[in-house]
Image (cartoon, rainbow, N blue to C red; front, side, top):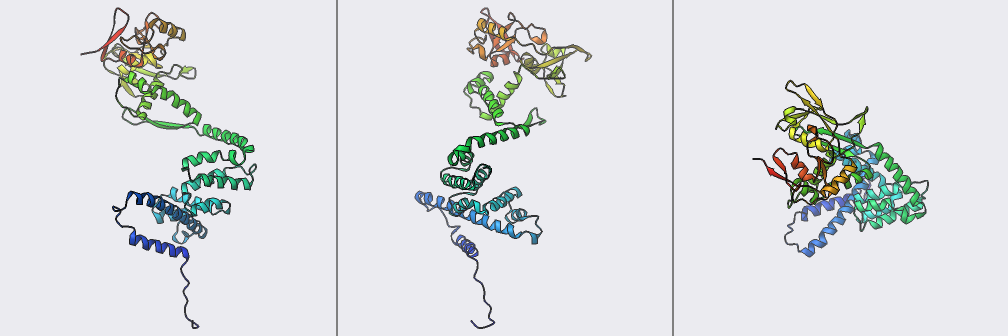
Length: 418
């Protein structure tokens, strides 16, 4: 080549790859797929997934290099993640996760995961799980060689496990590579996790303006499992069918759990105290409402409920009825509901043998103790005036739409009022 002639450096191999890939997609990417056989599809789809994982690995390597050069600076981006989110039209949190993962994989200590990604054997989700598990191993008790062994083991497991399963296995990886320190590490890890869970436990509730309260909570996993067991017992299809009369109807699990949660709260017998006073809801109603009129009642929070709902709850839940006269004067401030004692429940169980509704076979342990004369009307909490009713029939006993009659055999029947 003569002096002074211009020479052009060949394109970088990665640039050649990206260019060739774009050309191949232009040429073949939109080809119709109807002629592919099932055998073709079973071969092509896994192969394409592997290729995508390899491209993801290359993307992360380039992203790490872009972050090293701060490619977003000339464009005024706050950081590489901000530039990448704008360039790819993705969310900033997702872009930040990608940049962080790219930086972690750029560490020579994670060569096993990087190599597996380059080969298409590990996805980005699996890689993040593997790195989380390895980086969580305490350096003071785990040697670098053991960490490397743990990472290699998780990489091998990734061939047969999805990210969720891999995360669980990652938490127990020391039992495989260093069983002599695994138990102590797990104890310390769980101790810290449990403490954080209690310190960060939270609950929010707000009325939705349509008669419901909407909320969310975050509680320790043990407490959550305890609550789940309680609600699942109340949400059992047979129990819900008996309570709600929905035999034969298919009801979704979220709805069953919601109904169970209502019953769980309504039937609590041990309301906590604040300032020496039980934390109960005061329901204000007129004398007519207390005696059965179809009117409304007012909670001390300002919310409104039907008088029928208040009368029903007065038998099982911790509410206080404040009864008003004609001039809205308080005639009587009722006591918190008096519940039958354990001894009385035992006697009622032996006497009634279960639900006292005609034809009902619910056992005593699953029944409510019902006041024959409503407690809200001055009825006593005793054995003579008490009877056992299952949740479903107890609801009917307080439903103004139904009439309850006691037969000569002591059993009660219900009929719809006309």
